[in-house]
Image (tube, rainbow, N blue to C red; front, side, top):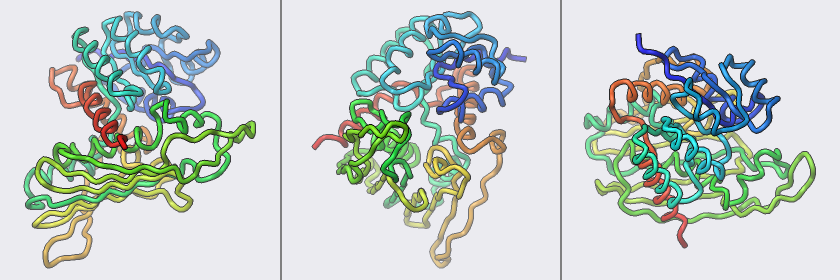
Length: 360
């Protein structure tokens, strides 16, 4: 039996954050990985995370975690501005790296990390987990097989509840500053544009408009005003290499039910991917929650469900399921030498695309 991959998680707060909601449940549920180490900036929280999730070691020093012999894969789940420093520490230690998306705050930073990873001869992964949703995999197989004929166009709408109230949690305040690279355009926009290309092929041309429609926020815990510079609306049109056209509308501040709908129109039928009502409003995002798949055909205009098989991650919480699927595929890549998980080079290209869309 192959030895489980030892994982060290940077940013493993035991109480709040993406690591505790997604990464740690995914790692501990898989026999292909073992939780070798966790790290936070405070000794008390690092020890609490170690105890809660059964990690072998706890650190406050990311360099110490990366250098430990029990750690084969370093996972970076902290705020985006800290990614470069922590990813670099892991690469310098000669470890494989899985970094959350966005990889960096700029395309130039992402390019430098991709080059450094290549020089280190290690494997990298970036958290573009929407690709591994069962409904997305089924839709991609149908498109590739030609079930839709020639794809003519696609329309994507996705909304989030983030920023729908004046008072916001303090831990989210940094995402309202566009210098931090963690706003709607970078996070949901990046996941969406990656999914477009994964399903339908490369984007040849992209133009976009952004807007800040909810500029008045304050931190709930203190009443301190928040200066909003990150757009909360993103509207884009794209032409694909195939000639198909795509429209994308993303927005924060949804006061009703956050939701996602993706429609793909072909010459022989259409597909629709829609978010499912979940207990967490975050699960309406296309990269997080479960998606339902439907199709229509000529002469049969009603939307008909397309069966999607359950898999090893289907029993996990919604926020952990697609992340667990990415981990599963990463383990296969590391074992077999395959390259199916999006890496830092993919992330660099995606950062370039987002910066292209952001240009006035």
